[in-house]
Length: 326
Image 1 (cartoon, rainbow, N blue to C red):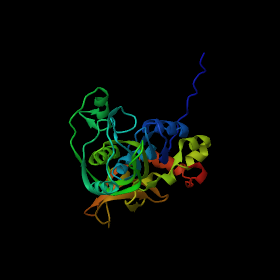
Image 2: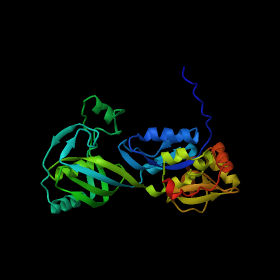
Image 3: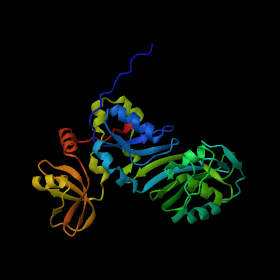
Image 4: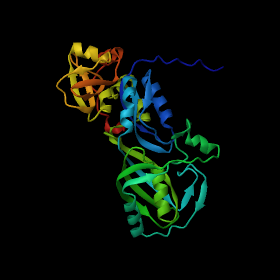
């Protein structure tokens, strides 16, 4: 007989956990594991990483899930290895080998081709991606052996640095540091660079080292998280407002705060702005986001009074992660 499963008593957790996603887990699997460890009631992430990718994955809990969309627009930075000469069905090491070609390019050609991919470029999203067409993820079509037409997307490669390379031998490769805009498919970038070099290729490794204001050095691994007690885990959860960098803070007194939380506009001496973080005073607490137009503070995404109360009841200052636990 199987032992009865222990039911986890969920609790309200509000904030952001910076996770270093391990190799082999999907973003959702990593999220569910962290959610279970924190016993959190509600959780979501701010954009996925493939199972074969590692690195920065901000996880949102409770009230923070209301602002996860804000982070999807953030720039990202990756370190990736492109295996040259071998093209696969998925553009990464998980797919079937479609073709093998000799790598005959020179160092000068590599430098010239990389320069070509700097700045604004257009990409056709890969079939093995979570992008949806007619309500169905592209990877679902791919699994059924179907290829659908995808519209090119405009993205920006802010920086493309060659970290290492090997153009001869049994496994030629390029190691790249990529700083890019939202919506960039590094797998597609690697494939396109390899095609431009005349040999084809696929990603053999991918690590996200920065996303928005968050860096890999700030992240905790699942292994370290598992080794902690509950109090240590909870102290790693960052405040909700870390998702709102660059938002202009506006503070409201108790009366205006209550009306703002009811969805009412407030009038004041504020400059027009699209990105405003609104706080209540006595005690100071995040109420939500807004924009200002013509002196009016217009509510956006709002926390509920219950969420605000729960955050105020549990607001220990987060502690930095010890280096040995990263």
